[in-house]
Length: 111
Image 1: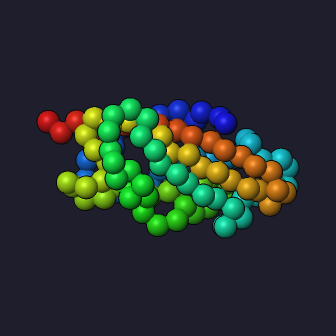
Image 2 (image 1 turned 45 degrees about the horizontal axis):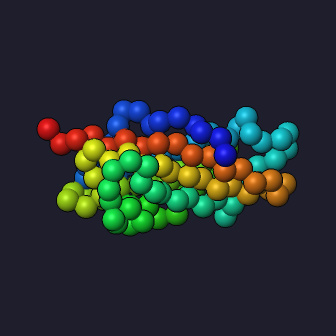
């Protein structure tokens, strides 16, 4: 499972924003990502958030070779201050190839 890095800048508590990964370099020539070929999961990497499963907003979507998922919710809900999350995209390409990629989302501490 390829690690794709950390989204930067960190997310702010109470916001909902899109998080995307470009899979261009993981596709064979002629392959593509069907609209229904992507699922996303969100989990806590470090810290505590018992409602983490509630912060995925809608379904992931595909634009070309880029997969995107909206994550978050208004405060006091949504991503929790000081918590690190891992967003994982599971992709099945038109050629039937499985691609699993993840990246970290850090949530700022409220000042």
